[in-house]
Length: 288
Image (cartoon, rainbow, N blue to C red; front, top):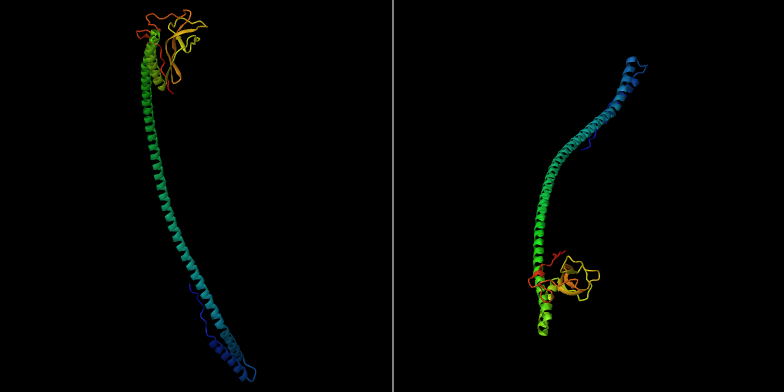
């Protein structure tokens, strides 16, 4: 905004009029030889007062002009400030509108995020339930497979034990035959078969002659008879077995002093020819 200045008046006409009026008053005083009359005195005073007014008038007019200019400037400043306030109000209104738009967008975004979170929670719950069902199904399948494997393991243990029992009977028969060649061949065959069984975790064992009877590892052919406390083993009738370090069948033995008689219908060596020794209790192996 440009600064406005009050117009400057030329003061010389007023000063000239003032001088003329003073000269007129002086001429009236000078030409009056005698005492001035009332009219002359009044006219002279009027001239002096008019001259004084003419001398003061330009300053009064300049003051009034300056006052008006100042008022006009103040009014212009107020108008400018009002315009600035209107612009500021417009900016505030625009910012308020933008804030409302931003708030609406934020509310929409929050609602969308909430919907997405709820959908994700539902998906996670559904996936968890699916995985639980799948896990339960897998566990059931694995239990069935483990049971099958255990049954298969028990079956092949039964078969292997029967084979080793027959081989042990053959070896006992070879020993009783007294033929070194037969004893050697059957003994080598028995050792080879036992080697294979040991690699699979099945370890056969026999009770040594004159070994004390151990109810944990030995068993009498007649389970109803109770052995004495100082019972001594005379002969091993059937081999005992451990599978992976766990006892699955104790060794079938005969005691000394006739405490345990040889079963009826057996060949030399104490092994029944009808395969009854295969019916000895065989506990199923429990794998970890």
